[in-house]
Length: 115
Image 1 (cartoon, helix red, strand yellow):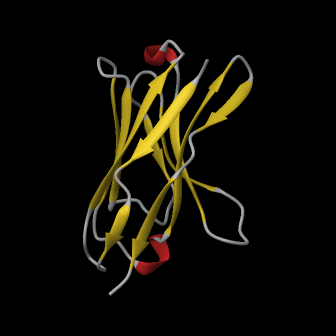
Image 2: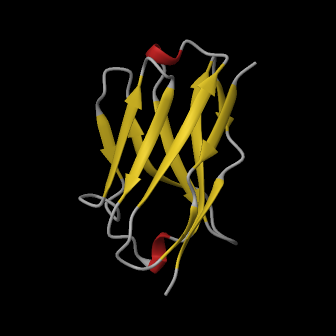
């Protein structure tokens, strides 16, 4: 059974930093691309960052140079380091992967950027 569990969300002031983590189980983690999405009420989930099995990364334009995605193929975790956070980054952040043609999602972790 594929399971993704996010952690690390919270409340931070503008300009602050947070590090999100996602622990994966039930898949051969090393060969699967992983990604972080985020969603705000009334809007569709949007891609924040992705990382391939070989470590190749992609970012949404809105977070380039502020966020960094990484993966640990020993601990089976994927992380999202978020720096210089802005109020527009407030959202629920979800970890996701595709396994055998099906997209799997964690329950999400809330990130709130507010003064």
